[in-house]
Length: 225
Image 1 (cartoon, rainbow, N blue to C red):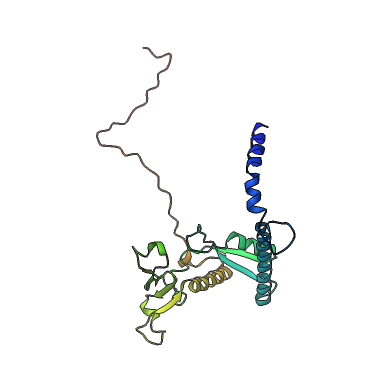
Image 2: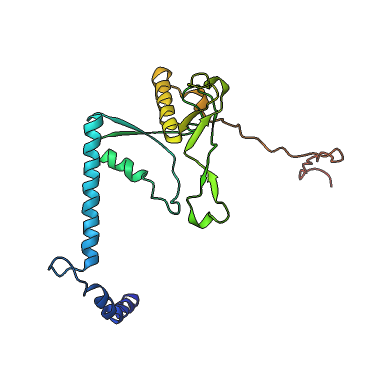
């Protein structure tokens, strides 16, 4: 009770400052509500409209019985980047009746979708997009552009001396299709996309040559002392 009374006292002391900041804001509607509440409500309505339009576009393009397959990759928010739609995006699809499945993205951006070898590598250097790192690193390796370094994949190109280029996301999506086809045919993920399982190792006690084994002697009460 004492804590709540201190809260009311602090609130009464700051109410005049908060009222001047939030209460006397010019709004486009003569309804008496502060501007920050109207902006917050408008943002909520706009997000609902955008989600509804997105669902309508998906149904118009893929149909009502579409099944969506997504990668299980996740990462924290990065500076100067938009937030990644992961869990909220899956919840939105499930809320509107779509089936969503997750696929392990292991080596999906390393294996070439054409030759099925682990031969995709980065090669191109571009100007650094991060302003706070341009002084130390003016040029960085482009993460989204890959090329296949397999020699047997070159003859399929128009010129044998050219590499086959891939967008990282496109290559990963095509490898998703290979994984789905493998699951449909034999119920197994292709070997090139499987994780290597390492058996747990048991730590053994190191015994030196000079160390003698210890013998346990049981002393009974009836034994002579």
